[in-house]
Length: 257
Image 1 (cartoon, rainbow, N blue to C red):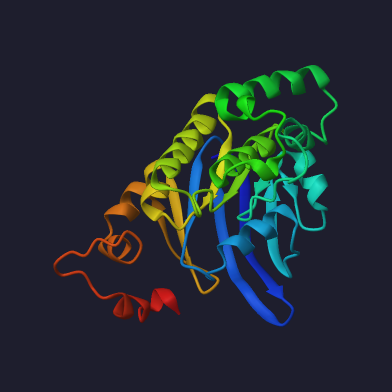
Image 2: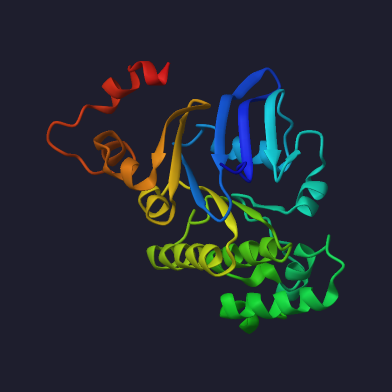
């Protein structure tokens, strides 16, 4: 079997003396969508930041497209073909929509291809063409999220890391964001690692998923299989079923130790 596009092996990351993630191992295969699920504070965002170089792991290996990532600066990692859309979106508020998009292509020198990708972004996200000359600060939360995703795509990534793309959005906009995620993967084959608290939506679009709690992977499997597990349905999807074990009992299993 071919080497996965992204592979983490026994990764540990600290914030000062605090161990944030411990022994994390996961794989993301090319052209797939993989979801990373977990509650607030479980370590999901730290996993993404460890991959993209915003924090430095103290142990373990992270390989992307055949290269070891730890030790690379974030801009160098972008140049290798990996883009990260953080939870906070972090658009450049006083730059226009067009300028924000061009900032996403800062590592590229292929000007004709960059212009073509700008047009592709306007086709993928028509609202951006309408807001082209407006400062990003004037956009709604949903529009800023779309802009952040489009800016990341302007780097022409092989792998897109999405951190809570539906956070704070209305139900209608959540549906639109996940439609866009499907299109990005389906039309261009861009591989996606998705961190998302909306487990139901994440499991709808993902092929494979991992569950992280207290900095550890506690469960993994195909998205369909996980969606059918009673514990996942109750704890993450809010669907109680007769005979389902309580979350408290579940957490006492060896799986959580």
